[in-house]
Length: 80
Image 1 (tube, rainbow, N blue to C red):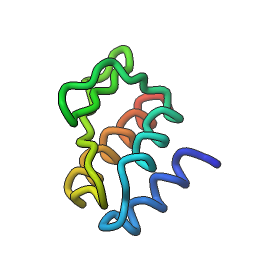
Image 2 (image 1 turned 90 degrees about the vertical axis):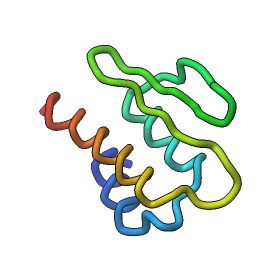
Image 3 (image 1 turned 180 degrees about the vertical axis):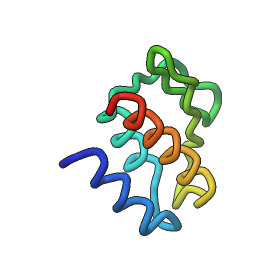
Image 4 (image 1 turned 135 degrees about the vertical axis):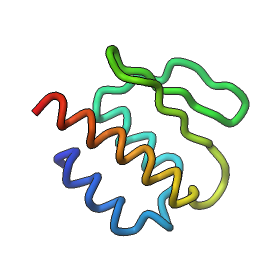
């Protein structure tokens, strides 16, 4: 599935996104897990600032989902 399409889908239901879904999207977009600090998973991609995603049971906070999706969209604006 196209990453941009997955971003749009998650944005529509951002109140019910779980860690594994967002992790899968971030990794599909080319980000690599660099380290885990407690419950925070830090993903890196050369030339981009790190993305930190909190891993906890249940749905993630909608503001966190928005922040990560915004960063992924910026990534695609840069690459075209």
